[in-house]
Image (tube, rainbow, N blue to C red; front, side, top):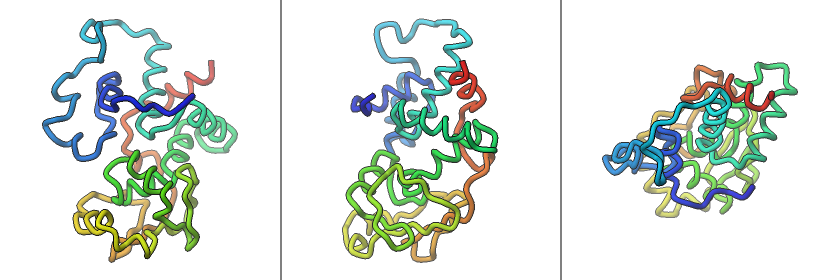
Amino acid sequence: MSRYTGAVCKLCRREGKKLFLKGDRCYSNKCSVEIRNYAPGQHGQSRKKSSEYGIQLRAKQQARRYYGLSESQFHKYFLMAEKSNAITGEKLLQICESRLDNVVYSAGWANSRAEARQLVTHGHFTVNGAKVDIPSYLCKEGDVVAIKKSSLDSEKFKALLEADSRVIPVWIEKSAEGTEAKIAKLPERDQIELDVQETLIVEYYSK
């Protein structure tokens, strides 16, 4: 399945909640969910009773869209989580959180995960001193993600570092200069601010 390239605000409206896919716009009065809080399309305003399967599907779609993943990527992470010794649903979210593009976003170096993915692809970051340009790279406990020295002179990163107002997750330790972020520990479920019932995702894939 190819990556979705349409209007991302429609994804939030379809799920009926903010997925924070468009950076600052999601926090403004221009947010589509605030203006039109119903699903897009001709029948978006009609009320439909969801089946058990439909509820499970929506939980899966919300999480997948939150992280900007294709169905094949998300299912791959589910299989990885299922094979682990941890609780499947919680491990699935932990894997998604440890993606390099998510770490870059969580560290405050991008306004959205889509932007973080683009910045990683353009080679602006290193992991433990080595350049990594793969957004799906899974960071481990103790890894140090940093902005490349050659990228620090760009207006983009100067503006981000000057703003630097986002609350950083407790599992990320950011340097005083704001140019490095260490994965102190992979996040526990209560440290992941994702409004989704992961048990429903497990039930969806277990059918």
